[in-house]
Amino acid sequence: MIARHWTGWLKPGEVANYEQHLTQHLFPELKQLPGYISTTVYRRQVTDAVEFLVITHWTSMEAIRQFAGDDPDKAVIPEEARKMMVRYDTEARHYQVAQL
Image (cartoon, rainbow, N blue to C red; front, side, top):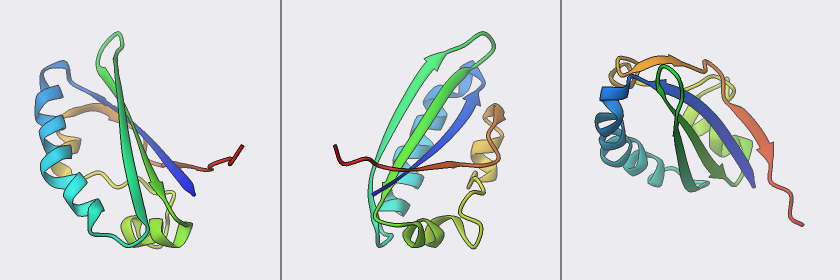
């Protein structure tokens, strides 16, 4: 299993809008993709923003390519979401999940 990590920092007044974006747009889209397993979202207040860490789990890098395209490290951030952010990672990080 592969964990895909991505972080974005939202304008404080945009938290509810971003969470709505996730639940109404991103999550339903992901559920349609072969190889998608699950998503976990973490958030915390930082000095100038609300940091969101989004971790998706996939069966393989090929499954991630179905979502992200030919460059699986490139972040997938719709324009609607970008407008809500102070800043964001332009690349995702991928980790093989250790089965301990």
